[in-house]
Amino acid sequence: MKNTRKATVQDVPQLSELFDQYRIFYYKDSDIPAAEKFLTERIQNKDSEIFIVENEGKLVGFVQLYPLFSSTRMKRYWLLNDLYINENHRGKGFSKELIGEAKELAKSTDACGVLLETGKSNDIGNQLYPSCGFEIYDEVNFYEWTNNDA
Image (cartoon, rainbow, N blue to C red; front, top):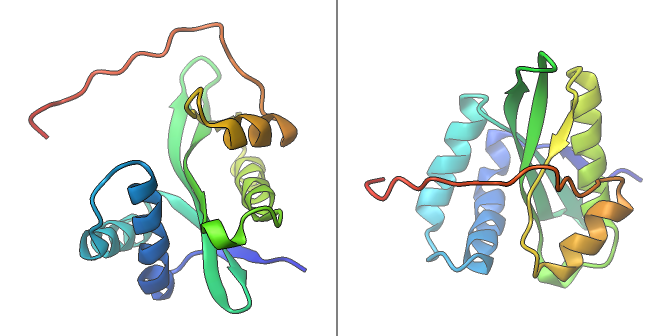
């Protein structure tokens, strides 16, 4: 039975609670009103694709992907930016279902692939992603510039 589907604005109240848990996991302060605003804008503006997973009528996880483009391949890429399953619902295959949705999105939009990054210390993610067909791409250095004014 498929537990996943694309998120809608009607899902934002429950989704924002999961999104808040996700942000807290990454050491950010809780802010559900800001999460609601952020997610509503992403959905309404079609800035990202969000898929959710339900278990017993309750949202328990999500994946959010942002569009990118590869100039050399002249194709779309998808950045799998956020993947989260509530800690009480982990180990049930929900992450793999959401990753399956990400792959289907890539195929249906004729994208050349899905990119993601995760911390070297994320033991679960570093086992999950290779088991779902992702390969570590260590041919390049990854750099970041941070706008401290934002």
